[in-house]
Length: 358
Image 1: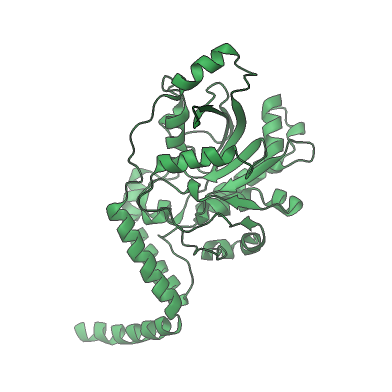
Image 2 (image 1 turned 90 degrees about the horizontal axis):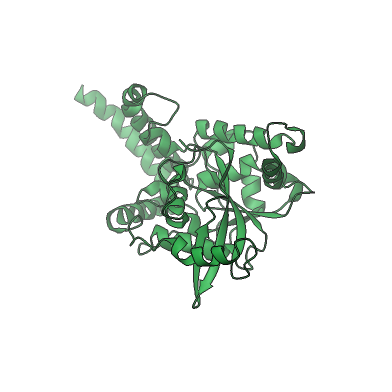
């Protein structure tokens, strides 16, 4: 038995050495990514920060004076779009598509499958990974395609939508008669694939670019929240994206604005810093549009709601995650107090467009 195993192992190791030799650059890059992931896992404080003051303390006096037209308050409408399920989710999270028993039974085979994929991707010499910056899974692609079908329907012909919902869907679609909007996204591949797939008809028609903002990287210490794309490089479509009928690589190459992508989130950063950075950018000349469509992640979104909703408001978004490929809209308020920017969500403005919280 041992000799049989050795006989099988030797050609396997020899083939691996040959493949690694011919893909030495990508192999070294993978070692670097692995070391970076371990370092971040051990030493980051991405989910730790002092609880900020209730934003209502700042905004209550301003809103009571003149709630709708106070010149001291700026307002933008934000739409959050959560990515579809990722390969990391498929391996480590139960999800809503299977029972706890099904997840438990499939966990070990799932781990083995994911490790086999990781080894195969390494041998191929691709900048790709099941775990690191995990891409959309096949289920994730299906979830996002359902969102794309929802957006394909002309809101004017839909009696199930009220006037405000028709306006928001028209904005998401980029309809010619709708107010202008800007699509921005996390630098992580599952979010980028979600925005490309869900908005592919709009992107194909308008030829606009999605602005990649590193401040939108997910809040977690896990390696799936670290970007695999080197600074100055084009995002590479995952092996799952490439197997689909959607031309992901064409969109990634031609319609991603990567100028703000400066690599991974720093080890001394945290979620609060990045959320505040996004709020700041939302009100600068970088994004002059009144409506901002944001492709991102569940923990980042939930943390945002917990931070910028008035603390007395117990909205479901503070406790539950936005479902995969779900969309919600709200108004973000900004004011300046002694030169310091302050932000708050108008708690009466929250609207579920698609999916909701679970």
